[in-house]
Length: 517
Image (cartoon, rainbow, N blue to C red; front, side, top):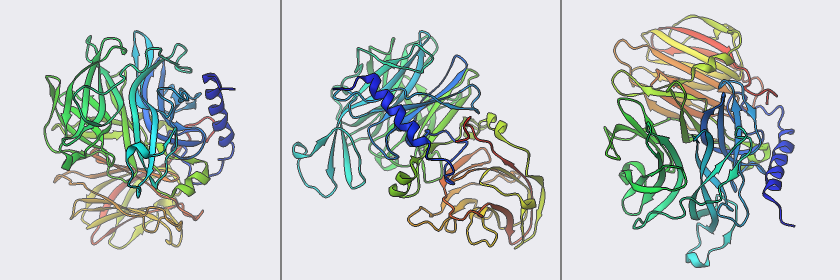
């Protein structure tokens, strides 16, 4: 007997609940980053605030800890700090317009009711990288993805769903797909990931990520009075392929006041431009810049809260092989919420959301530290694997500052964050972070130039396998580590070739989940 859609949702929720009971005690599983109760998560979708709750949705395969036919998972919070898992919001309808996945998108409040807009994929085609066969002969399957295969997504359309019970259940709209085809006259590479906003009392505006063959990545601009009838307007901006690739995913468009910010994920490191928005087009004020300087950050999504503050989350991918995370029963998480704004000179300012301070326990260390060349300080013996570490270097006469964490007593296993004052470079060194095979341990590095009187100001969040670094409210660096020794809990700080004075504070961080998952 064919399953009803209600049965499909119930089966997916049961699969997650069954898998979640087996995950306790995993030393790599984060506890204060948003994630699924079990199995797979990728792109953050539809962050929204409504009726006293912050809601986050995300791409979710409820059946295995691996990429697959996507539904939307759902969590919510009254305060951005304490979160609960909710029933899965939507799943593919076999044989329908979204039979191969309900992909990324937005949630907005229209006429007082929550509306979800997502990219639907009706079918997929997989073929081997080494196969030289015409598309008509390629194997067509309804779901699945493998590293040894390329993925061709057919029949990408845009759809909506609505909720009448506080976003706990969703109904797919009978008018779906509300955008059934690409704009006439465009030869596109992709067509996905709607990002919606409204300007004062005007119609809804929307961007779709795409690429124009022979031109470059593009954000396509649409408008609608009701989220059902959509009019294609024009390309908001077409990028240079040499700078931003040939196809864009997950466009975001933020009104930061003096400037607008366009963010895209070009099948690689997410990038952004700051610039001017007028006449339905965006004009960057300079070259594209990296949004995060780590190796696991992708597909960010943003919301503007009731106070006008922009918050952004990104997908934190795994940096270990598929067989390892598939066996673990969970894969990936989201970043912490980041406040996005402009600094005094119109540059990007990014910092952790202020609410995260509520997760701090009693300080393990909070004092000034005087550092001599070649010596290190153990920071009062503070240790842990779920920490916030704050370090302001108030006086620096050294070549490099080194902060070590997840360190064994013998120093055989550790991760190190290094700031090179002479080079103006910040580096995360992971070559001694694990004994596990095939885990990414390459360094992550970025430029961080300080003005003449500017102090180095670092905030590091450690959440088992997740490392998030915030530097001088200017940049972030997100990465993963997988220590294999239980005693890899220690901390130290030191400097090379000179001396320094730093103010250091360390707090243990609480779980954001009521069940301490």
